[in-house]
Length: 253
Image (cartoon, rainbow, N blue to C red):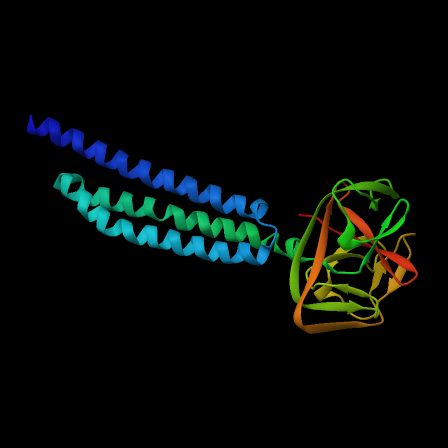
């Protein structure tokens, strides 16, 4: 009878540990992968990722005494294997956090790319201040596959604050991570983050012409400045007014 009870205890203990770890891991996965949509201010999301990493680390460390406690109910034959399997399972939450951070960083540039308040966006009826864009508003974009300008709809207008931005050609204020359309040396369209731009490069304009960058200045400000990044339907780009022309910007996310 004792042997039967011992045999039942072993699988029950292992299954119980696996279930608890799996449930907590799925909860962490849900929290981690939902942060991008739940929060519009991505500075807060970064802090949340750090917090969840600490929680996952604490959970993993807390499993050490639990494993030793539960291992008392496992026979000597299976005790070492039980500890090894339990320690491996306890690292799953940390793995979930690492994956989420990698997932976040791969898209971070598009989340943080934004234009300063007062920037004008090209619409079918003229121009509109970027901070006044609403869900459903129509704006002009460019579809490269058919080489023509098209009408897109605003799906969301993300906003946050920044303490620095770049001023292009003394007219366009944009954060460092926002991708703009440039002309490569072979004449093809490409996307480049503002912080990677250099003087003399050519940004693509509304008529598919070129606007040369003759001024590129990074500015730091004393108080936080509101910046905006409208998310639009396919082809996921729009035209920003710069002086007497409009340049093509991306909002891929």
